[in-house]
Amino acid sequence: MSTDAFTMDDLRAGVAAAIRAPSLHNSQPWRFRLRYGAIEVLVDPRRRLPVADPTGWAARLSCGAAVFNLRLALAAAGTPAQVRLRPDPAEPDLVARLTAAGPRPPTPTERGLYAAIPRRHSNRSPFWPTPVPPEARWRLLEAARAEGAWLELVIGPAPVAALAEIAHGANRVLDRDPRYRAEVARWTRRVEAPDGVPVGSGGPVPEPQDLFPQRPFGVRTRAPGRDLEPEPLVAVLGCAGDTAADQIRAGQALQRVLLTATDARLAVSLLSQPIEVPAAREQLRLALGRYGTPQIVLRVGYGQPGWPTPRRDVAEVLEERDQSPGVPRTAGPAGVTAPGVQ
Ligand SMILES: Cc1cc2nc3c(=O)[nH]c(=O)nc-3n(C[C@H](O)[C@H](O)[C@H](O)COP(=O)(O)O)c2cc1C
View 1 (spheres, rainbow, N blue to C red):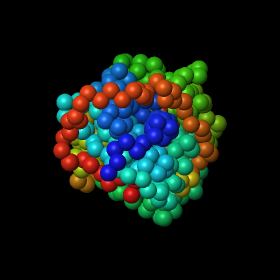
View 2 (cartoon, helix red, strand yellow):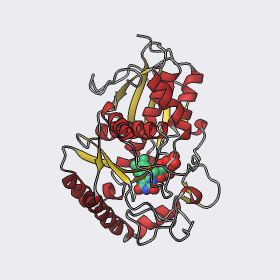
View 3 (tube, protein in one colour):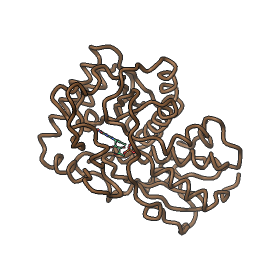
View 4 (cartoon, rainbow, N blue to C red):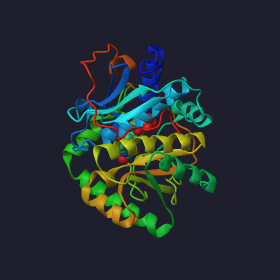
């Protein structure tokens, strides 16, 4: 097995792909460094959201999504990576170490999902009434499963209404906290910026008749009749546990689902208020009645494409000099995945 097969150009392209991952309020809570000929992904604790994300769940999910893009980019370049999650117990911010696992050509799946990275973005606008066909639904379920997570489609008016009620309850709890409102406002961008949510991507201004609570990023009021769809396809992504490694795995699964959706020309927006409020998350877990913990809610459909949101430069997040301090400490073989994206 070669450990030094990544070229610097491939690593830079990999990081450029990684930072296209979604993150709570587009906070981009990641950094990347080179060690022992490998590339490492870390949570950047300075960019964690203290009010919406006090435990670091969202930062780990976002970094997991970035890991998935990095895996894809390296596989697309012909040098798939072997991934070890949380390789050093003494460094909890270290999310993953990716080591070159020997060259091979990318698979059609790797090519297709990699090509979807620049096209993927959150779409908070109303979707068209066209239903999501069974084949596309099946692809989304398989995408989550391939990364060791599950995706539960919430089907039928009563289950969707129950989920909506949980989400509104969570939103009311969050909204009562002035620190939460201030944090959302701080990450809302009215002028061009390399992070935060641009008002133009924020979707329509929330209205009382909306089925789900939308974060108040947008400034666009709606023309009469341009409501959000009354029966969206809603899905909950979850995984077996809720450890830091589970959340990183869930982030990878989320990104695989999102890219699979983009590849199928589907639009997606994310909803995490029911995860941010512990009591609501527990209600959601009970309502789903399945083993494991919910990690995020997705709204899926067809709609007018929007546009990608800004990111900070690669140079700002990638520490290029390999400063390996000696022999790598590892947490043992647990968490090693097969190279690339199978
Ligand atoms: C853990 C997590 C939670 C999120 N929660 C929400 C949410 O509740 N509402 C929302 O509109 N977007 C949510 N998003 C989407 C982010 O706002 C979005 O990814 C970010 O602004 C970057 O934009 P992009 O997805 O278009 O690249 C969430 C994303 C992540 C990773």
